[in-house]
Length: 291
Image (cartoon, rainbow, N blue to C red):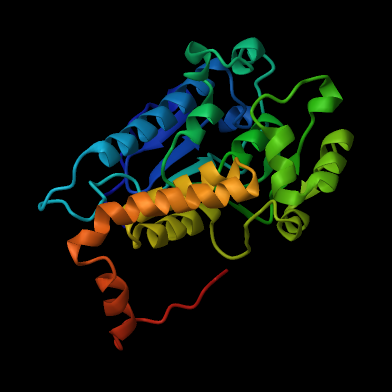
């Protein structure tokens, strides 16, 4: 893994950003069950916006002979987690974020919407969850590309219980993960779902039964970082853009992005060399999948 961790935001801000590869963003209000107020929302949005801007800036810079691996030292992945025994219990009801601002599509409001800023990040976001994942915390988790959790995880959507409207994507993303029937069952009843059922339904991509879930997320991020970093970012772009389209149009978009990639790289004479060298290397380690 990369350099040693060094916090770049004070713990009192409610969010700690640790600058390393990968980038680790931690909700840091364990005494408040990691619930978020306006300050925390702004800190989260700023952390993800900074990451997105850095990655986009790297992709726009022309490659050079000195730096031809596509990495430029940017994070291979971003990990979102919570300090202490649980992930996030939603909004701090003693000082919640302004729901009119969080529901708005105006640019100056979207700038401070953490889930919108997560959507702009060009590398995989891994959620490392423990304990309660409730309502707004549920929406933060669903904005991750990959969701890991240990056996203490419990998801719950309480919007209907308290007359609150979802505005960070829960009404749309949950059904994409577990199907419309199960999503309606959870959201209309406000019933919790435990870790094993969440894994069975596809809400948790991996149930971590041995060791710490953050350690597993760091391990997974390292595995992502062993691959071609430019292709990881472009693959995510194809998934995100195509996934928001009708199926046939999504396939067309994949071809468009693939053509643009090969027009850029096929002339370098090295396009397939990495794959050929990997296949022909009889001494390379054969890793066992944990999927």
